Length: 204
Image (cartoon, rainbow, N blue to C red; front, side):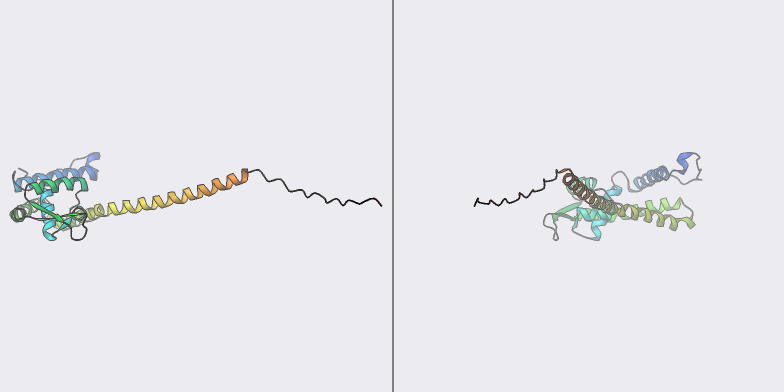
């Protein structure tokens, strides 16, 4: 069981590596979550999906990706397994006939309701590891990082679109240059020589 104790800070490159420290913190948070929810409880991702669907019934996979931050391929597999377990129900989207939407089943709603106090207890244990004066700042910083993660796909799309536009412009200029070069290499047409008209004079 994870217990609160006096924090001992390590030294070295890993002690100042944000990615390493966040990975360690994530491990701690997931351990506490597992202890509070139990072996038969919802996983953190399952809880996130059920909570998101409870806020808006009939969510499409694209909307779920945006709300939970779970990548598309992982989410597709997760939703399939949760549907087979009876936690979710699939239906045709009312907004897009090509898309499938999901809603909470009665079982899913009941499991979510029973999981909420357990997840809240896990969150309280995690926050209790920090001094009271740092907790709000910590949450705000996590929210900022989550927002940056949400914005990353949009930024990547915008960057890809700009790169594609720039490539088209380069290709257009290359075609112009090639056309100009071919025109310069083309041999000049010989000038037309006008033949003088000879006037025949008949002998007298």
